[in-house]
Image (tube, rainbow, N blue to C red):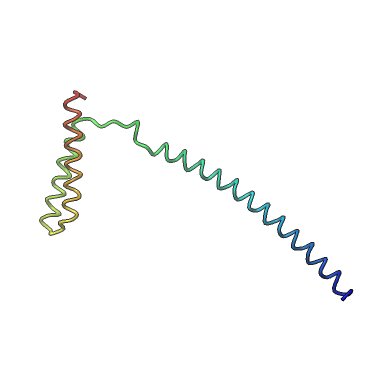
Amino acid sequence: MNEEQPEIERLKTRVRELEAEVNTLRSNMEDKNYKIDQLNAKLYRYKQPSNLRMSRGTLDTLTNWRLEDAKRLYENKRFHSSVYVGGYAVECALKYAVCRSKNQ
C-alpha cells in the first residue's frame, strides 16, 4: 500500500491543478460573455429606429403597398397571410392619420 501512496498524491495534485485550470477558464469565459453582452447591447441600441422619421407621404405609400399585397395574397387564397398584411396596412393608415392630425 505504501507503493501506491506516491501515485495517489500525484493524482491528487494533478486533480487540484486541473480544478485550478477549469476555474481560470470559467473566469475567462465569464469575462468574454460579459464583453459579448455589452457588445450586443450596443448593437441593439444602434439597430433601434428611434432616430428615423417617416413622412406622411411615406406612410401613405406604405399603406397602399400593403393593401395591394393583401389583395394579391387574398386572390391567391393565402387568407392568413392576407389578414396579417392587411393588419399591417391598417397600422400604417392609423399612423398616417395621427401624423396628419399633428401636421407632421
